[in-house]
Length: 113
Image (cartoon, rainbow, N blue to C red; front, top):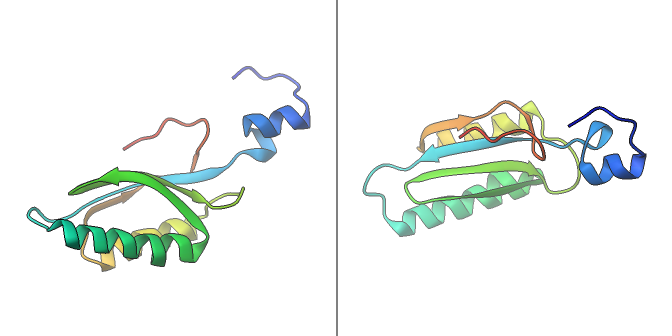
């Protein structure tokens, strides 16, 4: 995006400068042969215990391999602590290949899965 003097209102609409929002991508996988019931239960637990309990939001999908993005429920920025909470929760529940990205601009950065 070209650098120009933009009004506060426009910066807010574009989610830039002081209105930039940081989040991170996350991916993990289940063991081959994991039942749909187990996958559903673990993902539901993940949303309740790691995401909602920490004021976060998750958008993603998968079956045995999951990919998504995590941001805050309200306008704001995720922190390194949020990344650690999500990573530790996934690893402590036996999920494999757990990866989280560095904090990224959720509106303008390219997602790296």
